[in-house]
Length: 158
View 1 (cartoon, rainbow, N blue to C red):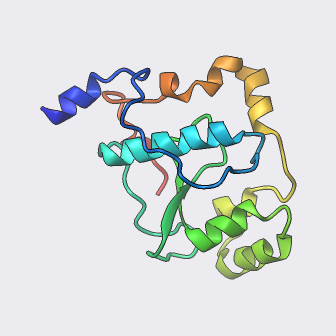
View 2 (cartoon, rainbow, N blue to C red):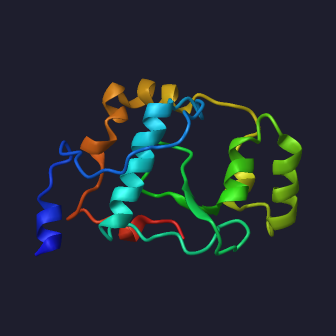
View 3 (tube, rainbow, N blue to C red):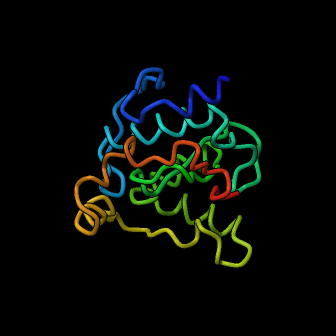
């Protein structure tokens, strides 16, 4: 019964989303603070409703402590990468502090093909590229989010 009520929820009904209570975030990959917060809210909403698995292990270090979800593309935050907080912070600071990030990559890369080896070391404006390619509506993640019955469990990255 609870699941049926949640499935019927319209994407425009944003009540019940978690509130961001921390300092303002800088632009990342061209995504504004507001866009990043919306992605964070959607991830937490999906986890709270059982539509997205809660991270259980860092995809880089294997740690099970202080886990978070990371997105490179905040216009499609429904496949976040599980990552521990210290590595997550280093990842976001890699443009300003590349040595710390490079040490993490050197320590944890096994083949060099891991997702974290492929991310760039220079800022990009992915958000602008996506808007140019798909139109401004791509930023409306609540309208585009795969709310059940289009369950996302099968497309999550592990």
